Each structure stands twice: as structure tokens, then as C-alpha cells.
Image 1 (cartoon, one colour):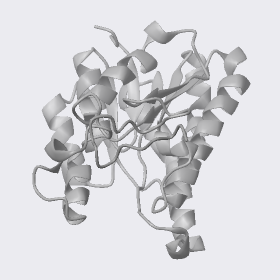
Image 2 (cartoon, helix red, strand yellow):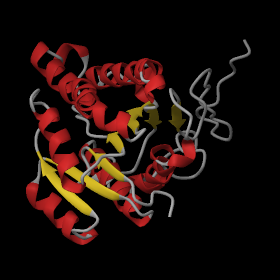
Image 3 (cartoon, helix red, strand yellow):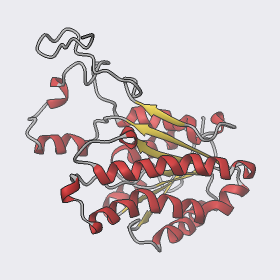
Image 4 (cartoon, one colour):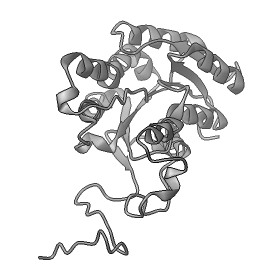
Length: 268
């Protein structure tokens, strides 16, 4: 088991990618501290994983005082914390004209401030255990899309924090890495796109240039990658931002080969 005897705190872990990480980590021998705002969902998952393997903490990361409490509760759950996965994030969609100060502050509070405050609160514990932080970012950190301005900015801040703290905490043997995740088919994403009018079964109708490998990323794919980065196998690597996507991001040209309606001659 690749995570035997490790204790891992995962924020936003009652649904989506976080839930799949929790399930995979337990299978790999870890004990997990689940976190979320929905108590019923969190307790149900804790019971499913087993009380010997999982604890649950309820709270809102938008509250500036909560990360310190979450850190203390996480340590109390199993007596230590070896790894922190900053996974929780708000993905509220809004273009610049719709993004006022309050909306911006809410997203930054959860997506950038809370991860920093959690690392700060857990730092003595992480130093003691030569621990690791894994930040779950997004490929949108590099630019983003028009209707996810504040979200994209928050993930850019997370990426900078990852590299900054990897450098700052290296001599303390605390590692900080990040996964920048591409388009992933979570239950929530499926429902969002239904709301956008794509219709039932939309993932099977995506154009090849959007999914050149034939399908979207699944939460299980992210969880599988995360095992390496939260585990001891990845020691001593720190400061890495890994892109989990199915096409290159830098210098990418969207490949429309085989689609006569979308082919363009860029040689002119």
C-alpha cells in the first residue's frame, strides 16, 4: 500500500475529485480527514470508509477563522497530519462586468486565502513529520476563460503560492506541489453542462479536438495521480506544478484535423 500509515487532510472531500481522492487514499492504506459543508454527506462518507479510516470536519473555508480550527481538529482526529490536500474551491461563473468586490472576495477567500491559512496553521505539524502539501489547481491558472475570471485569478495565486512556499519551506523538509487539472467529468460538471443546454449524454458528443484521447478526465484519474504526490514516493520533489490535461498548454494549436468545417490554414 503506497500511503500506509499516512494521515491526510483533504478539503472539499465529500463530492467530486476530493471524494475520489479520499476513497483512493484509504485503499492505499491512509487515514483521511474529510471536510465539507454538508454534514449529512460527510458523515455518510465517513461511515462508508470506516471510522478507523476516516474522520469528518464540517466548516466553511470562507470564514477566516476556520482554517486554524480545521487544522487543530484534523490533528486531533488521528494524532497527526502527514499531508494536506487543498482541494476545496468555488467555481462561480462570472465575466468581469458581473464580478463585483464581494463576489471576488468570496472566491479568493476559499480558493487562495484558505489554503494559505491552512498551511500556516499546520506548519509545525508538517515540519515535524516532513509532510507534504498538494494544491489542486486548474489549467485555467494560466489564462482562464471569460466567464471564470475570479476563479482563474484565484488559481493563478495558488500556483504562485505553491512555488513560493516550496522554496521557502525546503530547508524544513516540507514539500509543496500542485496539480493543474484540466476539464474533468465530475457529477457537478455534468449537471452544469446540462444547464447550459448540452443535453443528456453530452460527454459522448464532444468534438475530437476537445478530447483527443476520446474522453474527458475522470475524478479517478486525478485521484490516481494524487497518490504519488501526497506519498513518500515523490520525495524529495517540491515546487512542481504538473498539468493534468490531454494536450499541451504552451503553444497549443487546437487540432481540427479531419473536421472540414473547422480546418484553417495558419500558414498564410
